[in-house]
Length: 274
Image (cartoon, rainbow, N blue to C red; front, side):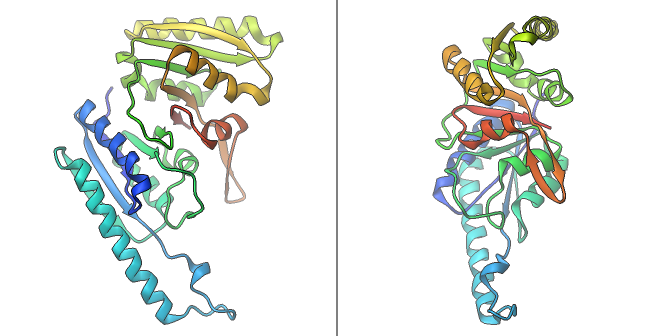
């Protein structure tokens, strides 16, 4: 398995360009086609008068601004993709759902790589939503968007469907890493079981040519994400692989606690699968 098609959301904001740099570098690394999507929708809350009737003139102004934003996003994307096989698509709709739909032809989605802000779903594709909606692995870049080496990798293990899927989805990175640590953070009364599980996973990875080792640590539930990031710092790992836990509850996308904590302000790259 490898990544032959990488999807990234391009925005008109310069602060989001580190995401494009990461996506382009990965496309180059895996000899993949880079697919750029410019997507922005109308913020209806900002174009209604007190009686709930959209103001026609304001609608025209906002629609024109969206067109300008999409043209700027395309220019930024093509600057990073110029020496790669690439495709571009611009849509006037919510980025989360447009990205999820387009992911049918993608092996990997690159998200993040921009400071957290309040632009909302009409302009920004939230990594959490992409993970739960797309059915594809999502690589979330830290806000700084620095380059990904993936020489040392932490696999944040729990014995779950999501973690097993993440392990398979991350295989192109795992196979080329200098070292992979299969790490389970558990309660003290589950330590022996965790050692058994991580040992089995490490042996499975070795069969695939991965330089893997197992490790367990004891921590409370509220400390899991911090313990994962702490181990990544200790190992010099810049990529964390994890299952993403969450569901759609009453039309609202709800993340599990550890997934939410990993995404709140990622210190390293995080590859998530749901």
